[in-house]
Image 1 (tube, rainbow, N blue to C red):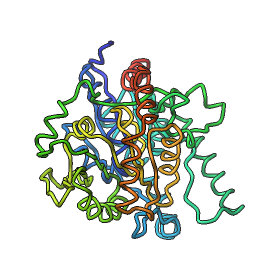
Image 2: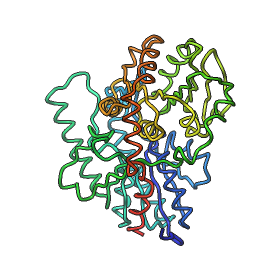
Image 3: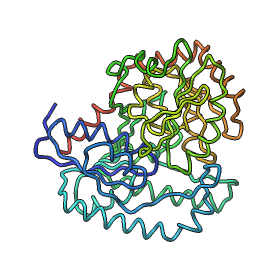
Length: 393
């Protein structure tokens, strides 16, 4: 592998939730291992997440979507309170990114789903690699009308043009027929030459991880089924589901035990056991729990689904209400055969246990997971991204 001695890479992931920034961390660590220097720019939860690492981080102007009490995206509230201000925030972000890049003087900019950084890199004529799993995002709608179809079409056209300003588009997803974000990746054919479907990015693979028995011993478990519920995302999105699930998990039958991460990087890692659920504000090594558990319950974030598959774990997915990307991810995981999905409004103890039992008893689910993980090119995303970075350094 080529050394990166003397080179600088500027990482700029979207800061809403943890999926974007968490998949950039293994890449940044590998760049450092190969002798390169890195710097991060992000905002909101992304800044909190990076605080546990030793990367230099610049806190960019914040931009986010409004949500209602269910954790659902509230498009009307977002438009009414942030519609015009979002444009000015974007301009402030571009100005901020230009300033940071001029100070850091990167040889390459690595962006995860941020338009402002692409624009800044373009202005400064710095090579830019973009990673994303939504080329054509769609806004949630109660009703489809011709007006909103026109709005969606305009937004997607403009976003597609902005994404294409990058020098390379890297998609951290499985090749077909296993592509999770297939619904969001219908890019115009003219952009195809720039796109590279690289596979999963995982800092730790199952064979590199802790002995599963150590996690179970620390939890005081015997032969119970261990369920890992990783509920992350922005606080307004994750808390309604956490408040719903915690009392349900506590009343699960004794044959099950649930460990639920509450996705709070500043909450510490002190656990609290209530009935048959262990609540942990922040799990320092989620891969250890992925390795030890028998199945996963999640919101439907792209990275969580990818990692669950990589660790051979079936999933129950509960997408955030009116969140097109998570609904699309959940639908694809079901089509592939590695997950069950359910609406948040249908969540109950009985409904969850029924799905848990079905997944654990299904030979087909296990066969699909084994088949996917025997296909070795599915998990080489990190190696492939480093190869692509090498081309631009």
